[in-house]
Amino acid sequence: MRAAWAAIDLEALSNNVALIKAEAAGRKVLAVLKANAYGHGLTRIAQELEQADALGVARLEEAFELRSAGISRPIVLLEGFFADDQLPMLAASNIQPVIHHEWQGKAVLAATDLPAPLHVWLKVDTGMHRLGLEPSKAQAWYQALTDSANVAASPILMSHFACADEPEHPQNTYQIEQFKQLVDEIKPTATSMANSGALFARLGQEHDWVRPGLAMYGISPFLTHAPTLSPRIHKLKPVMTLCADVISTRDVKAGESVGYGSAWTSQRDTRIGIVSIGYGDGYPRLAPEGTPVWIAGKRYPLVARVAMDMVTVDLGPDSKMEPGETAQLWGADLPVEEIAAHVGTVPYELLCNVARRVNLCYEGSDK
Image (spheres, helix red, strand yellow):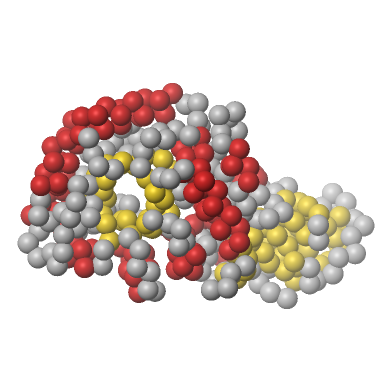
């Protein structure tokens, strides 16, 4: 028997990347690998992404981990650099920062010790109001960076949708129009706006780069399935299947309580199974009673409190199950989107919270 592990299906990853490439229809692909490749293992996933034109991470440490593993493709630092003294390291390692604030732009222009010019991306705020330059300042900064000897080529102009997971939200139209105005004014050599949601909702299709994240791992980013979505979204396959074994079973009688706080009391004579996974492995502590768990081809409801290392499922009064069966917490037979809905969160959080002690088992590749 085993404690928690995650089976990572690399054939599913390849399938998803192929669908993304087909949907991108010739546009370049920046594959997003931040947060340990959404819990799937940063370096191993990067090694599989030979079709990607560049890789995107959030933190400098992630970029250096990829370089240390021999990954040579361009890496885009999506939050940009955090301190001026990081710029020489970025230039030396072909790590491309996103410039989203004036202080970063000033630092690039003022740098005097770069071993090579930087490739940079310039982010503008078209309505998300999180990161990005004010649109009124974008043209001046684009020109300043283009003219600087510290910059290797004109920046790639980018923005980010606030509501791409809701394709019919009016904010999408507003942001597309705002970005189009900037593109018409600046006339950049390359542009990027579409994340996973925008790509499959076919929003902003005229831009040069797409930035898939969640879809690459086989998860739909959409809250609702609007009729305008690409049919390819339904062909995505989940890459991660989170598993753990049933390590104990026992019979409990009606009126007996189980787990911390005696929070669940059985209303009938039944058999329960104890599964070797808990919030210490990243399974959500607040998963409510009734959250499904897949065991031996059948769904069973979660009961009692999620503990650090264990969860409890109600196997039913007629169950003859013994220890040794494998439980699936989400994955190929149990969509992570469904678990997220039970918990009241999003699939991103569940995937990213998979703990480092969970062994990642890669399947379906010769590498």
